[in-house]
Length: 126
Image (cartoon, rainbow, N blue to C red; front, top):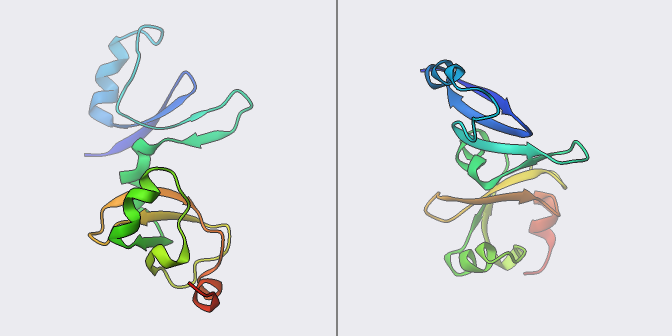
């Protein structure tokens, strides 16, 4: 089955084409949600990813970070990832690149931006 992206008001949805075709019977102003929300456009026109897009992003991510099990809850509560909390990092991750954060069991936990490159992380003290 093929999937597509759909703009509804200021939100982007990821949806199967067969469901999208069936939804054309409902008027746009009555339609609230359709498929999985990937992100939305802010009032200033910037696009913001939502956490519901994590499964789709994790499938195609080039840059990944794996956390030790002791640091997972700290990350999920909103704290930054320290070097001592990282178990592995993808080779060649540049500074300020988007990364997907995984647990050691390869479960995606979230996404973010790398503060340092892979080479810098290896040189720093824990």
